[in-house]
Image (spheres, one colour):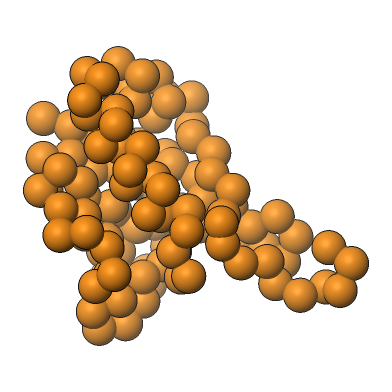
Length: 108
């Protein structure tokens, strides 16, 4: 970045190895749902989804909330497929190359 300004979306996204393996083990139709949720996440203006109704722009089948209410800038949980699955992620808030890191994924 030549001008030193904070980068915005689309955000880079990386997966922890265990989370990537869990995602790859999901049925194909669920992986498509995860990919759609991922697309929403990497294009969000604020990946923390802070504030009242901050996730109102997301489809009705996706919700985001803090993993712990005592850590507002900490890990987030993105629920997908009408709460049948979730992924836990953190946002590495850096001026150069900010990115989202998915730590864990689950679907039932």
